[in-house]
Length: 249
Length: 249
DNA sequence: CGGGACCTTGATTATCTTCAATGCTAGTGG
DNA sequence: CCACTAGCATTGAAGATAATCAAGGTCCCG
Image 1 (cartoon, rainbow over the protein chains, first blue to last red):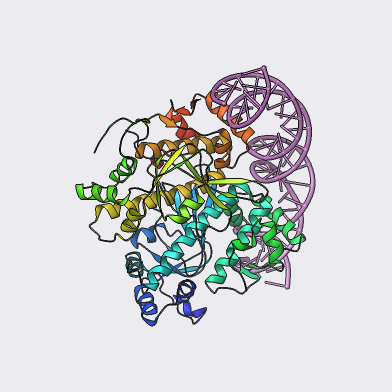
Image 2: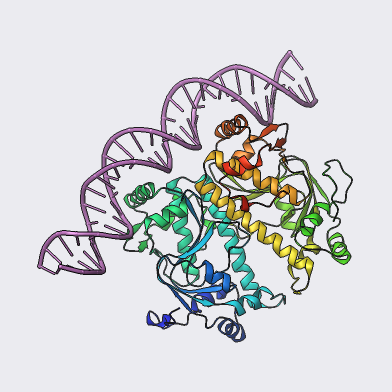
């Protein structure tokens, strides 16, 4: 368990993405910020690429991603694998209990997580109707539930091309909310293989679909960075009514 | 712990399925039962087949299904439709806010729903760590989240045949928990069209897949009633490790 | 008996997977 | 510096799965 500081990559506080996420749903006061920072501290773990987080999550009820990408997936006996969620800095990871066997969580990139147990317990029991922190947290949970619903629609009724556009817009939206990127850009430090397992496609078809999106001028994909030069066109390709994603102003 | 046999035309209390669901997760006392029954009363609405519930849900924050089946789905502009959840007596319906536009809820059969607003508000704010009702409710919410995750895996990585078996087992499990059927039987009062929209398949392919399951002796499907004569085989077909679904004892 | 909703079937086509190479790039050790 | 390797991206060809199109068929109900 190395205990290096994430500040060697950025000098902002590890809770900053979560603070930005929460601030997007409610005006937070100084005391709210304090509770976030106090509730998430220590128990820092650095995960190498591919490292499993299952045991860590079994030990600590909730971990904040401070840096890196993490995936949660169901795995079948014959090796087929469906990624259920892609998690970024600002996301809280909780054990996949109750989801049945064969679920696993692992780091897609070098990642750092922090014990957020105290924050988690505090905010999950936050019922004071006037608590802004509690309200913001409930909204985040609701948005995550909505993402599961969206993925169901994606996998059930969209073509490979539409699915890909749809996921990229979701990642764009998610990264904007956490303050991890600017409008029109998406960090995408993962292999096409992982993308394929998120979208229920084979790696080969994933590759071909990406090429088609490139040819159509909807994405520029290079070196772990994605550019979306035509958000309007991409939304159309994803079959999203423009109201479906957060406005990008 | 009533163990009465399921009865469709029964005069049992409309909250009975929910009570059985909750009782499956915690020993409930007399006062818990009281709170359920008091929190869910009046505001009864009868819905004809195909009736939209969107407006009703906008008016009342939570409605208990007392009778019948209800579906929640995302609809695309070109008519494609993906059912996200099938809801049965004992389920609480809440507005599909935050899920983005184009979500809709409608009755698949004749149905009756009751205003459960008071119960909903009470139980969502239930944080006393020793509250059995609150604990049971949180478990139900967790199970529903797990069902969304399972549907993602189903749609993303299972074949039509596997998907169908998988969904039938989920419905079997769900109906057992609510005391709506007996082991080996599943109420299925819906058209193959609806089934297809749940599983992301065309109606034609749905039909052929059902025939295959029949030929393989895994299901008997007649008149809105499904029999599962070979649960072990069905679990195998669904690629479920036997630990994945509730034991049927 | 006519109509409508639902189920079933056959033929054809589209989408996506699988299999098998090949290319590319960065890191590694001689 | 140069093979050498490993991981990832890309390509072509063939095959499987599922969608689409177009009829019938069945059952129920007014």
